[in-house]
Image (tube, rainbow, N blue to C red; front, top):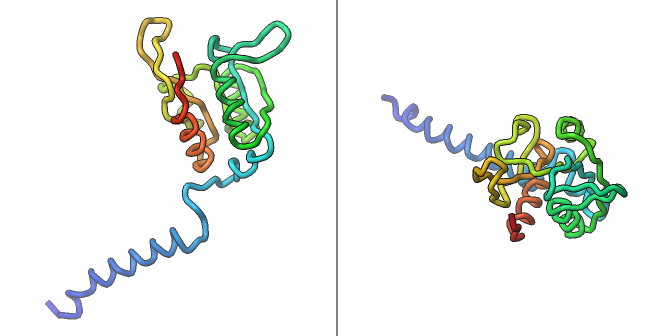
Length: 166
């Protein structure tokens, strides 16, 4: 084989590696990123949260006050970001649709890790293990917009720091 041809695969590999490095670092963007700037928009602003009623995680009092373990976590997360929370209470399907259309930033309501909505929304890592009504162990998650990776990473990091009691 010609000496010149023998060196071509190594040269091609170096060129490809440099191109990938330039693309990843040279674009001036930090990873993970939010294509819709969700985390940046929420910081010091408003976190738009949806709650599907599922006691003790999300509860709605007769006077319209929203409470529950996940409600408290969302309020604390918002405070961590210097944000206020505006709540929408609805069924899961309506909330997921709003999340898909970027009308919400977060959905809670005792969602399990095997949520059927996982193909439409991003879910956090499980943050608490519980025993469900059938006596089976399960893990709870929260739902966020697909692709908003910096926001999801910040939410996951916050939930990781919390000790959530079942």
